[in-house]
Image (cartoon, rainbow, N blue to C red; front, side):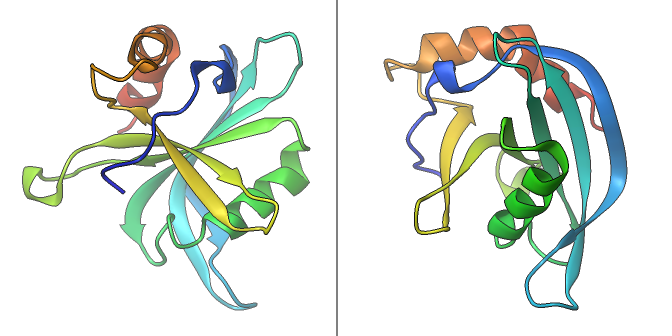
Length: 147
């Protein structure tokens, strides 16, 4: 997913309080018996519409967060309601594995997940400045809060 289109800064809400931090969150990974484990953090949002921003970080335990994004979205929508945004955080544990990324996950009308890059984004992209401002205000709090 290296060549993702950058997200729109308007889709990223300002953050308020952290309301959930579960380093061993179990999520449905497909089928009725499979599950994965990831680090889940959820913040209240401070925008005009109250809601939540959920961040799921790949830990390498069991199923892939990317492959399970639709199931993860459904589980979080049941818990936090329709007004939430979902970010997938891939933490590059070693330089040989690639780089750390933060992607906005959306579910299309056909039920399939779609990703837009939040960070890092190319400096020559017109959305870079807005995304860089959001990262400076909130995003680095997300990526720095990992153990």
